[in-house]
Length: 191
Image (cartoon, rainbow, N blue to C red; front, side, top):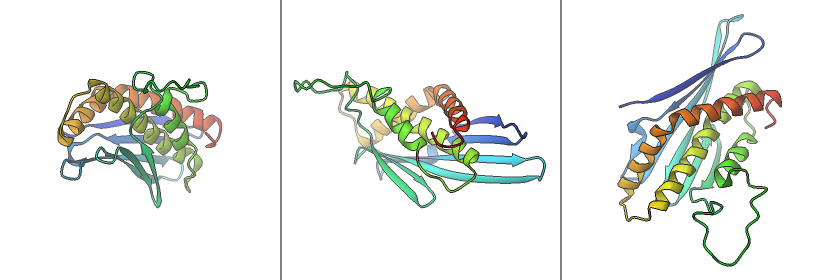
C-alpha cells in the first residue's frame, strides 16, 4: 500500500511549496537489500502559473550499512550505523564528546544534507533538502532501534522492520521537514 507524506508551505510571495516523501512498498527491493524512498519538492507560482519540481532519492542499503542520497548528479553516502548513540557505543574506554554532534548521528547527517549545494531556487532547494534530511535522520533512528534488538534477521526482515518504523514515525518526519524548511528559509538556503 502506497503512503505518500505531503506538507505544503507558502512563502511571502504567495508561492506554494510542497514536499512529498513516498514511503511506498514499490521502492522495496529485498534482492538488492535496498529500499529506495523518493522525495519531491514542488513550487507553484500563482502569478505566472508555473510549477517547478525537483526530486531526489534516499536509498537504504542494509548490506553495506549505508544511506545513499541522490539529488540530480549529486550523490552522497552516509553511514547507517550510529556510533554516537550511547546505547550502541562500544565500551572501549574512550570518553566521547557529543556536544558538537546534535542528536547524535541523525542530527549530524541532517545538518550535512541541509548544507548540500543544490542548483535550483534556494527556497525550493530548502524544501527538498529538508524532506531528504528528515527522512535520512529517521532512517538512522529506525536502524538504531533495529540494532538495539540484537536479533538475527534476514536482510528482508531488517528492511521490513525499518519500513514499518518509518511508517510509524511519518508524523515526526514531516514535523522535522517543516521546521528544517523554516530554518533554511530564514537563512535563505544556507542551512
